[in-house]
Length: 336
Length: 295
Image (spheres, one colour):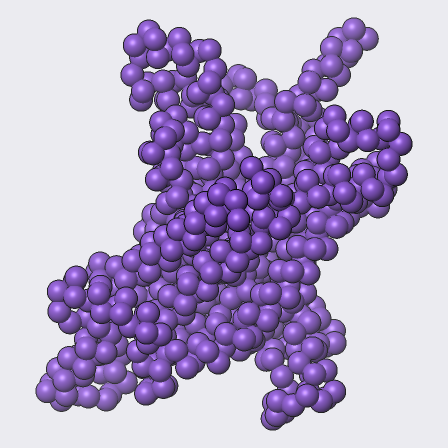
């Protein structure tokens, strides 16, 4: 393998490790530097509810929680312990569904988030880029400017508002789709038409809200890129040389304009992930976002911590994978 | 100052998108300023009959807590806008510092700064903000939230600023300043900063959008200070009172409609500004102005 390719991979891997390092360190310090103590909060909550009113019991609970949250010992000891647990895939037990480990809960929600995120990211990226390049190439056509206006109106709307408007319109005012959940209640997972159609019906609205925002963004970016590439000399030359329109469009223009969009996908994955989390909350879709919401509701500190840590690691690795796929599209990285 | 007014009037005249955007923003700002003459205190409730549909007396209706939604929204929009501007301003300080220094210094400083920068670009911010707000729940005002958001919202813009400085660095006037002994800070602030002002402006609006949207997200999850009226907390309270199920749809319609309008307007302003600043379209416009003069 050529040297530049290897150094590219090494560079991306270092970047990935660094994102995880910075992200995890931030999450480690948040509860420790914050003026409010998660243990204190949990104890106060329990006392308010009426449990543990005996002072000894309160003290014991406090000590147990400090140990549970890994808040005992010096800061350095805590930090080392934090990483050790993480590398072993151990995020401690969840408080609201004690003694279930946080990791088990996350593992249960992960497929839903991954499924929602991956399908919508891939579809919106492909669709947005395809439409965007067509609109950039045929920019004087009427349909291109109409799609452009729609994209500009949809793209800036925050994920929450988009999801919310869709749920109101298509599940409440005109009840075509289910209002929430991932599957009809009581349905057992099976490879049957009933199960799959229920799965699909529940997934349509959450996916649609992510798609509408996503396609608009990729469309607008790609349209600008293509308009710029078209002005390049080599495109003009190809036109005069009599190369067919389709070939110019797909092989010359699109392929070049696509490269920044691949980097863009890697750069924006964190934002798209945020969107997926909040969309899950709106539709009670049982992924990480919904898990986090329930954790907030139940005051489950270790579960929120787990979701944050896991999101950082998951997104960084996904970004690394996109970065590693980049050379497939850009031969210059390989043969420099 | 005069030239800045001229940019606005240029934008207004030449670009229908900007005309729409500037008009909407103007109306929204006036709406927010109306809070200063509100007959009701945003903290009080049950001063009006609850859950009235929009009428002449209450243009946006009243909510289930007996508050007039029109006047409540003037406070909400004002707070959300202030919060967004504050966040955008604070994160600008970091973005400009990192962008200018990294681009100008180059070498190892640039590489280290950009690796950190890219980490912040990629980091999924929402789970981290959820964690922070969960721990400090109820103790954070909008000011504190803006400070925390600023710490996470600078990275993308720093990169854009850096890329501009990279080209400025190679220009003649930079060499002149360096050879005449101007110190680095002065070169960056008085020679380079004016050139990156346009891009700073457009990223500021983008950041404003992001901040207001994030506040809505956090508020809806019940994680911001729900005692302060903002666009987000208005939606939160409406959801808490199950406004849709009890048929008080106008309680939700007001914040959703206003925020959608505001978001589209701000975004169109960014797009319009981008087109305006793009040298290619600028030349076209100048040609147009010339032929106007001739005619």
